[in-house]
Image (cartoon, rainbow, N blue to C red; front, side, top):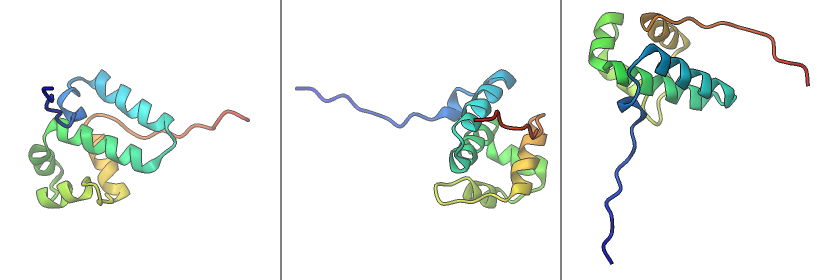
Amino acid sequence: MVKAAVSDWDPAEIIETKEDVIAFLDGALQEDDPEFLLKTIGHIARSKGMVQLAKELNLNRKGLYKAFSEKGNPSFLTVVKILDNLGFRLKVEQKASA
């Protein structure tokens, strides 16, 4: 039997447009899981290019990679800066009543 090689899928490789970013963010927000949302924002940041993003935001490249690593915990300010750089902002709305 021949075994097929399996590689890790990287969402950052398919995020290309603003519509892609919106779809990924919307999907992550619907999960009601803050860690999943941060991981998704990390994928979006990598899709733009962490080196370029760090330069544009005047952030440390290594720190940005670390913040969005598996054990990372980016600050709220970093998340807001990334979203702003990508042309997005956070918006609060009331949950539907149960």
